[in-house]
Image (tube, rainbow, N blue to C red):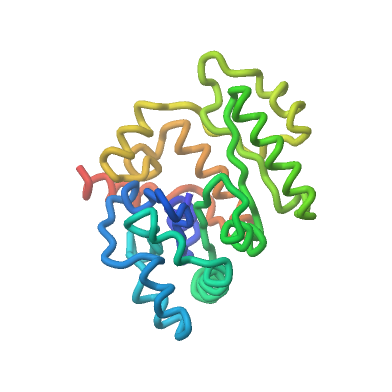
Length: 239
């Protein structure tokens, strides 16, 4: 999503891997960060844009990542106050900030959710996941997050054995703002190669739906048709 936004808006995009115990964002992007958010919080008293920049790992000129801690026990060092301060500073630096969170309502995750303009709640078509998503949406209602802020997204739509989309929406009492089709071959290959599938396979249905989701977020920032030349260059670069 971050790569799709950056490539179609010419905007700077910052990514925070807030899955603090087992975050894999760097792995998905084939990055080898030297420092993480756990290192940053040691210097949190001096936090400003210049300091934060030193702890970001670049994926491209327009996308930079604040990686999750290397080890699960280091997650405890990141407090809710730390997370709020980091997000506030990141927002000064980037047009878009994408935060990958954990499926929990810890104080640290609540700090990220409170700061968000849009929360995308990812659902799937199996009953256990829908049950948990429904509970999540109810909790967010109790936190007085507006419907405009909370956006359910259906992942792996069309998977065999899944419920009908309309049935799922009726169960959640919310429409999905986007549906991401199931395409295990493309997605798993991209993950294993560390290349986002919007780069390696931009013309597939799963990629096109990610572009559509990015367009929904970007609104007037969206620059129209995807830039084939830029993606062609990336495909040649990665073989």
